[in-house]
Amino acid sequence: MPAAPIVPEDLRTKLLRIRGVALDVDGVLTDGSLTFDEDGREWKSFDVKDGLGLVLLRDLGYKIGIISSRKSKVVSARCRELKIPEECVLQGELDKASALDRLLARWELNPSEVVAVGDDLPDLAMMRRAGVGACPSDAVAIVRDAAALHLTKPGGCGAVRELCDLLLEIRRGARADKPVAVPPAPPEPQNGDVIPFPTR
Image (tube, rainbow, N blue to C red):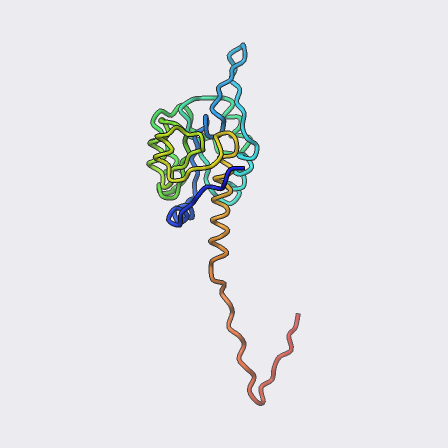
């Protein structure tokens, strides 16, 4: 089993600010394979664990968006299943940095509040635009060099779930570290004071 990604403290601080996740599809949500039947219909395989991770983030208020340079009805169907809003599923995008800017405007977030996940050259611009650029373990070398967060699993095989779990873990840790507000203790009774009996 691959080790968990190494996350230095400064990167954890950046990840704690994340409120949105922008994902490439081929090589991130899938293993990058393109399969066609004899009628030219496209087939893709998605990791169900990745999907659940995205649902968990969405239910906590994180924004989820797709930025792909290709167009695929299969991707649209998968995003509908995950309840990713249609306006946040951007396909056929050759300028992914501009596409990310459109998501930021829709989400009303700053670049520092978004992590962008990519695996190949077309993803570099959006990864550099985002507060944190992340990549699966099988990303091309130039993308690995540019990424701040190196996931230990390959695209389509749990890399996205690993990111989701990491964001959730950091969020839980931040909450656990918050000081708990302790109400002041009641004053000690003085001679002659009447101590009220607690009622339900």
